[in-house]
Length: 238
Length: 59
Image 1 (cartoon, rainbow over the protein chains, first blue to last red):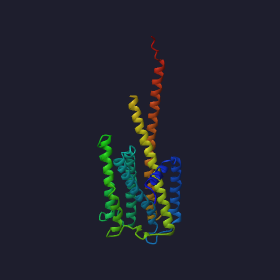
Image 2 (cartoon, chains in turn brown, red):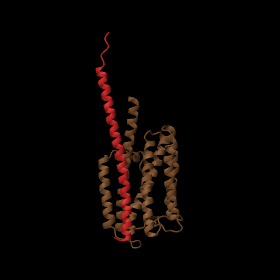
Image 3 (tube, rainbow over the protein chains, first blue to last red):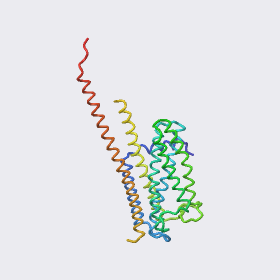
Image 4 (cartoon, chains in turn red, blue):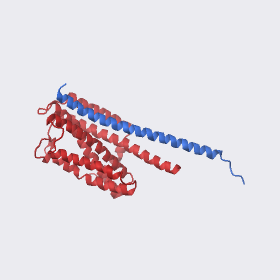
């Protein structure tokens, strides 16, 4: 069994990967995922060509959940350990989650139009729950920017991000508990609902989107930290 | 191109466009930060020059 410190050490290792290497890995993985999705993976027996949206749609949805979960984890670190970096990291994670969440909603709507003939179905619990999760995290920014920068803003944002993460398993389970079962179930208790090249393509796409999200996270956090340092320097020089 | 192919292409294009807009916004922000660093460097240089030009107090 691994000690918790080992996991935190691994996160530290991730931070040491040069940004250039991450960007290159993202480019290679996304290109490979696109080639697999369009040229290697076979057509689905039921849905045909339209199923190919799933490789990025599901990967992006999973990545959005990971971003919100990371945001909550960083928020917990802020409240628990008073880690000075955690508030900004939590904010950037939630921001990433919102960007990937927008992609999930748009690609999902395109798939719905193709398969169901409608852009949105209000009677589908899983769609509405994901929208609720998305809007909940949109409100995070309204809360954060309505309070002056400082410890109070950091604490309020952290508590909000922690509450929001409760909606992640609810949204994830809603697809499995939906009565209508219009929304395809990709993962069940017995494992993934597919195999062969479809599974390989999904795994490549999932890795590509996760690495892309981490690269964008690193770029954004570097920019935000530089901005903060410059603001402090300007105050000193003024 | 079939209807399904058009929709799938549109979905992937949307993902690409969102990532592109995000990267462009980050690049614009980094450009602004770069200009601010240059301005601070210029101010620091001016301050150093004026310090060097000040006559030393005698006695």
